Length: 450
Image 1 (cartoon, one colour):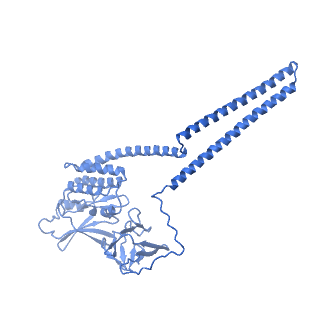
Image 2 (cartoon, helix red, strand yellow; image 1 turned 120 degrees about the vertical axis):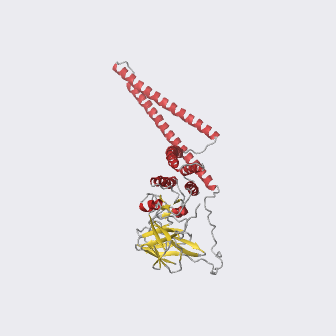
């Protein structure tokens, strides 16, 4: 495969460019500027390719690719792993590009399919590729290596991404694979994954409902003997309740029968003491009421005792769990005595690393960017930037801070408004060392390196 060209960057007014050049343009093997492929590239705005212009300077052929508001894929892969949707966007973008190139009679061999030459709109992960006329590559081999590199950055917690990556990997191992078939394969796999996801979500919902039921119907643990005794007690209590209800009903019916009998005797003048019968019926009715109230009171007391017993068993089970050692709970620090010895004061040596931070203000608020765990990326888009600055003059991924040989360096990440050090604009992707007191400007945000 042909050697990958070197990159350099240039900022001109409000435009950022990646420049690919070749010094032996006029020597044997250089691409003829009248070649139809060059004309197709320069005279047509092909969707999926970075816009490009061509210049010749002192025998050097330069291609200027406009990269405003875009980030190289290798920078994205440094920050996060790829999910299913992101892998599909990248692969489908590549496949669609090669399908469009056929309309312009281009075979795609001039497209450099490498992460550092693929630029991404970080908001929607839409890819843009570089077509370099002085490059001749193997499309199928380049695509296979590109997919292999993507799969090393796959998010293994995303089952759909793992499934899709495995299918693409298996297909590209076939020495006769066709790029156009990958689109069909991914569309079919997408439909299958939608069904699988729906089924998985349904199963998760069922599991959640079952766990919720189990949570709200908690019963303290009882041994087999306790369960047997508990059941016998329940049966005896139920039998007593039934017997009491039957007795109350019988007494009430007897009282009613006595009242009816005394009334009949009074009407037909059959003799007998009416008042005595009436008093007896009232007494029996009061007895039935007393028995009924007694049963209710006993039932309420019994239920209360059961509730208290269950609460006590639950508390005891929680205490037993609390008594068990846990590797997840932090160990409480031992209390120091009042006169404990705190140790000797350490002398500050020359190799002690000082606190490194960027300090500034934004909207009358203090802004501090710690530079302890380098590298970090600063920008306004969460997810791709480690430190987010909510300001419309700051790019989505504006600058990157790295450490080399104990010193901090700043890189401008193709930002729209640029990154300034002490009032001077630094180059795109150019490492610039920071010293204490340096002024860094990101958009309109001014920071001091301390």
